[in-house]
Every structure is written in structure tokens, then in C-alpha cells.
Length: 256
Image (cartoon, rainbow, N blue to C red; front, side, top):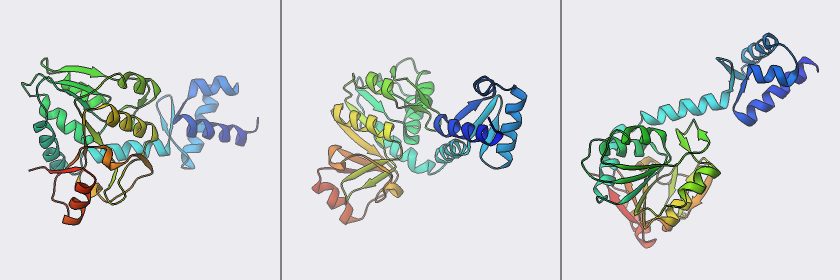
């Protein structure tokens, strides 16, 4: 196999799987691990991948991780307000679903120190880690194949497990909330399918979203807005949007 062909196949595998390992590539192509390391070094110099210990990751995956970390530290005060408003809607012994969302992390930070006997269902790793520290919380975690850029799980195994539950309240994250189009959108199709399922199975569901996301759209519509009971956000919306939401039967909760 020509060197260029091997490089092309490595990039194909990288685009498909998000990462490659030196040892596995050496076995697949029947060459030494040193040859593979040279291949990865060359491709990194061309800006086509990022080398890691024992292999490489795609540039797109590296950017996703950077974006995920950026989201954690943006709009921190807004997220705290929304989280506090969400916790005020909870009752002891309620089964609560916390979706993959940086606002769910803010909710977990409050519940971690709470004396309430809540039951929490989540598919987000950070939420699991925080709430596992509180012995009063009954915690259910839905695993599967991890999406590292989202810090959680949203695959078929995850969906099968989580669909067995019937939460009292679901708090759902969204990248886009378009009231005029009656639309809720996400970037991730698998995550979007899970969000839609939990809206369907929960007695009450709320979108948790900073006001900057309202009026925006992302790439995948996972549900119509009128399928949820309300939106929790941190600032008053224009009267026209509030009225449009009310016409859809959707309550706007402004966090104080």
C-alpha cells in the first residue's frame, strides 16, 4: 500500500471513530508502530489531526471538547439563577430527570448540599459525580457509550434503559428554542431522540435555557415546543414572545 493510501485510510478511520490508536493501526496495515507514529506526525504537521498519547484524535473532536469546556464557564450567573428556579419546582420524593446540560450541573451543585430526599435520573457524568456525594439522594444513572464532548451518554443502550422510567419532572437542555416556529433543536441527533423520549414519558417537562438561546435554531429538531410545559430562563422575554408561548400552552418562568 502506498503511503498516501495509508494516510487516507487513517483519516477515514479518524473521521468515523474520532480517534485512532498506534498499536491497532500497526496491526491493520502490517507495519511497525514506529512507521505509524511517523504517519501521525506527518498528518499532524499538515493540520489533519491532533496526536495524543498512544494515538491521535480528529481536529473536529478536539474542537468539540474545547467548545464543551467553553460552555461550562459561560453565562455562569444566568445558569445559577435558572438552576435555583428549577430546584424550587421540585418536591421531595419526586423522580427528576436531569438532561445533559451545563444548567444540569448548576442544579446538581445545589442538590449536592440539599437535605431533600430526591430521586434523580441522569445520563450526565458530572451530575452523577456530584450527587453521589449526597447520601439522601436516590440516584439512577443511565450509561452506554460515552460522548466525551458532551460529558454524558446518549446512545441506543442509554435510551433503552432510560425509557423504562416515568419521571415526575424532566429538565431538558436545548441549543435552540424558537417560540415562533414552535421548535426545540439540538446539535446531536442521538441526544435529541433521548430528549424527545423523556419529554414524552415525563409527567411535567421544562426546557432549561439561557435567554440568548431563545429565538435561535440548531441543526436537529427533537420536539415541538408545545410538547413541554414550560421554559425556565433568566430574563424577561419580549411581550410578543411571552404571548406566543402562552398560546402554545407553554409557561415562561423567569428566574429571580
